[in-house]
Image 1 (spheres, rainbow, N blue to C red):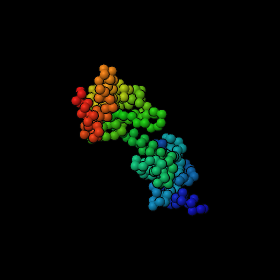
Image 2: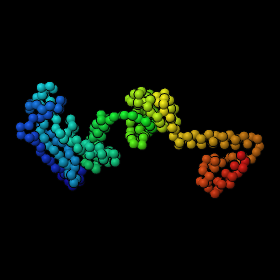
Image 3: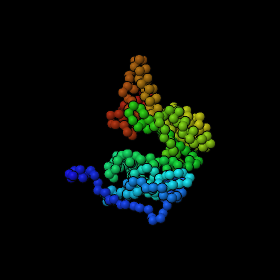
Image 4: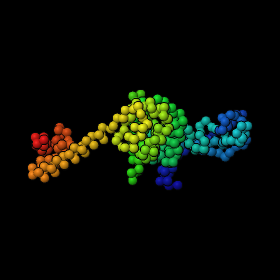
Length: 281
């Protein structure tokens, strides 16, 4: 084998494991111990890497002759279902997947993108099972583009002083998609929401108005300023056309940025134009 091939295949430390003598396997269905039915072929479980070495646990799985469930594969404390990764390794990968991209995580720990995805999915599923929505006082809703072609996801966060967390993700930014969040939490929790932060996207405003009847809708300052700037520019352009038609000097022409900028941010060239606009008005 060439040196280049070895660089892409990390060294591995293999450890053969076996059950204690006389121990009975645990049924993966009902979690009860039962007699051994037979042994399966040896399985390989990947553990957390150590000093650049892959750590592999080798174990012959047993099948349980369970009275309640029939013949079932045993449950092992380090594994989860049919996954090749140990539970500890899945938690390890999911932790690093929060700091790096999934591809970078896979490359850093000599595993595949698919295994990183499986680890994240397992941890997220466990978190959703353990999650309690509880009382929700303030939420924030916004969209994020995840692909070209105007493809969006709707995100709902709980934004309170003692609790900041992602509550829900839905496809698209339509009324129907946002309605799914309130269907999830129920009418009782929705009516207890006191504050909703959002932008001025009409489908969001429509759902908030009908679902959060007791909430104060706080609009995003960025969108409010953008709307005000647009309205100001339309008024300026209209007044500039009117002055030109009436035969006056077009002092408002080419003064868009003078009026939209803060006074402290005006350049030396823009200050005289700004002063003339103010004197004219």
